[in-house]
Image (cartoon, rainbow, N blue to C red; front, top):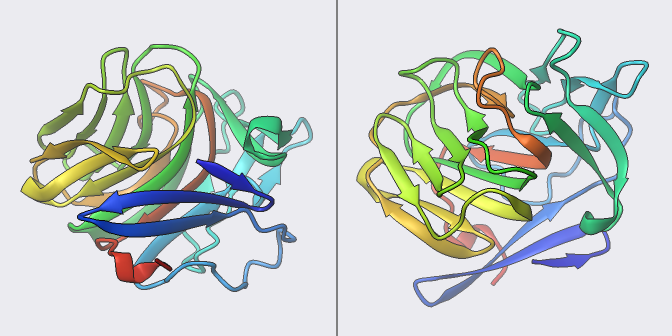
Length: 239
């Protein structure tokens, strides 16, 4: 991972081709949601980052705005389940971040089912080795789930794909979760660490930081998450 001012640049090697995926933390006014998105937007389902939030009086987040323009805002109105907003985090070049305390989560409700392929990119930090859900869907049979535990990082959407090369806790890292039946994979900081069959559940809604209700919550930070309802190829970014 290489931090460059307002950009977090990840270089991936995929089948001999160099892919550069750019996660841009753009300074923006919360109300000014219309902006130029710094990556291809085809089938962009949702884009969340800690620079686009609505805060309570004590700096907790009740709304994490969807910067994709699709208005799939992630909301939490229950006090005690709202992540804490930090204006600046040194490790990610002074950019804002959200801290989840193990009970917090944000939910973007949707009636739309997203069938495979689905691709998630998330910047994620865990601070203990407890099982921690980063991303999931609305219910057991409509979820594409990314989880870290003391033994692995795994994907689940009907079947489990376990990648034992990485386990919690870990510092800020970019995790890519690709859900596409038997062709699914998970990558960690640009390295593919697991591939195989995860089943074929679609994804409904987006829950960030825990299961619905707050179980298996992340203790740590999630400053940015991007969700595409498609596969991502080298043509999507500058080589």
